[in-house]
Structures are given as structure tokens and as C-alpha cells.
View 1 (cartoon, one colour):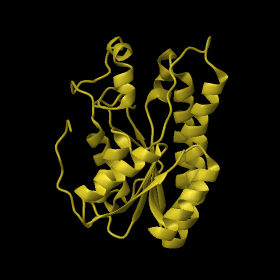
View 2 (view 1 turned 90 degrees about the vertical axis):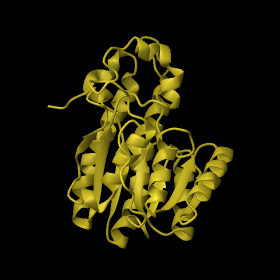
View 3 (view 1 turned 45 degrees about the vertical axis):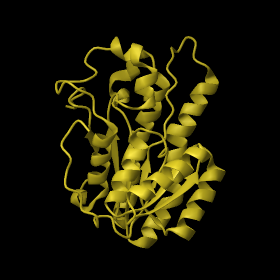
View 4 (view 1 turned 180 degrees about the horizontal axis):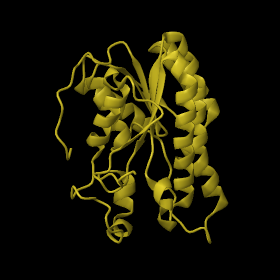
Length: 263
């Protein structure tokens, strides 16, 4: 973690069920699952890879024996799978009170040669899937007295995707707009929705797979001189999901080391 580790309250999320998508990789999702487990949440680890989901779930449960952690294979862009997982989580852990839409696909390429099938996949996972997860879980939050949705986004929509990832930028821009709509509709039911924006995060698969490309992009690290790591993002998610952020909704929190500064 490039920042300072905060003191974790092991009971901060006690009794709350948190569902995190793409939580069994080595990047942001798993860091979020671990941070919420450390705070006492009942954590639903979901990921598209069944074997990885089982392995990571077992590891988190072993590292946080006081927490309740369960794993569910999930393609976050498949509505039938979303239905099955939300039903299973509700039956075994309880109603989802914290939803972290972290799953994302970024297929880099120019508009001149981009495969339309890749466009469809990016939008399905990055925008349609999160909408459907909210559609399924917000009634549960409403019945339970409230909840929090954290949509993991990017500042790519604000800079146009750099000319190489316009579909990704468009999907994340849609996710930001969706977040504002969720905040308006969820507010009367004590449901908050927030958009967590960032640039490149070190230690993620995207950063490793595109190291040569990122090296040619000036200003990626910002004035703090380093990229955030998954634990930095997880700490921001924990703050937004907590009662400490009780009056933050429909807004954007930028965690990018100053690489992008909003007006």
C-alpha cells in the first residue's frame, strides 16, 4: 500500500453482507474483499473463475477467521448467473447491504480496427452487469433499511480514453451517470451510490499486461510520484461503504494520486 494504513475497526461492518465482483484476482477486488472482511462484513467473493474463487475465498477465510466469507462463481455480465448468485447469497448470508461493482473489461484498441464483439463485451460487463446487479440488490437494501453501492470507475471518461480505450471510457462514463440515477432513486430508502474514480493501479493485471504502453503515457503517476495500489483503492471503498460517509451519495471520489484533478 502506497498510503498510510488506517486503524481498522473489526466491527464496523458487522452484520452487513458485502458482495464484490471480480474479487478473486490479485488486484482491486480481492483487496476490497479482504478489507471488508477485516471490518467484520459477511463477504460474498464472486469471480468468473470457479477455481480461483474457491481458492481465494478459502485464503481470506483463513486470514480473517472471525469473518464469514463465501465464494460464488459469477460472470458479472450474465443476468442468469447474477440471479442465481444474488439468490444464493441472500439465502446463505442475508440481504446484500454493500455492493461493489468492480468487474471490468478493457480491450485497448483504435476505433478504426475495433472488433464490435469486443465493444459488446466491454459494455455488457462494465455497464449492463452493474445495472442489473443494482436492479436485483436495491430492493433487498430497501427492505433491509438501506445500503451502499460503490461503482468502481475511472477518470478515462473525463479525458476521452486517450484515443486507445474509447469503449472502456464510454462504459465507465455510463456507469458514472448510472451512479447518479441510483443515488436519486435510492436516497429516500437510505441507499447511497458512489463512483470511485482512478487511473492506472499498480499490481493489477491491466497494469502488468500493458506496462510498455503505460511507460509511453506521461503523467500517469501524478504529482505524488507513484501509482495507487489495490489496498489504497480498498481503503477508499471501505470509507465510502461505511457510516463515516453517511452523507456522500451520487458523487465521485478520485483516488489517483493527483494524476487527474477535477474542477
